[in-house]
Image (cartoon, rainbow, N blue to C red; front, side, top):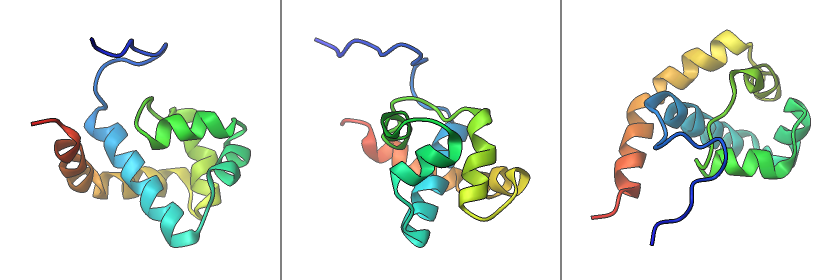
Amino acid sequence: MSKPRRKGAAGPPSPFTLAVAALVDALRGELDVTQEEIAEAIGKTQPYVSARVRLELPWSSNDFDGLAEIFGMDPFEFVARAAEFADAAQARARERQPG
């Protein structure tokens, strides 16, 4: 039996969502930023951040200002850096697929 879809989930993550998640992962590790610190920066809760880190739900474009700020860049640079992670994110998605 398949797991019920959570409210707001719209199918598998898009390549852009995967790229943003890969960038957030990399920057969190590089700068030792916690989910709680991200939550505070974007005005959300730690469970909100956790669902996005686990790719259960996509980041909102409204989150990018706070994400960019906590990682020391402007939102446009954040999005440009996410584009650089697209290939790595797609490879990660393939690894997660069963079979």
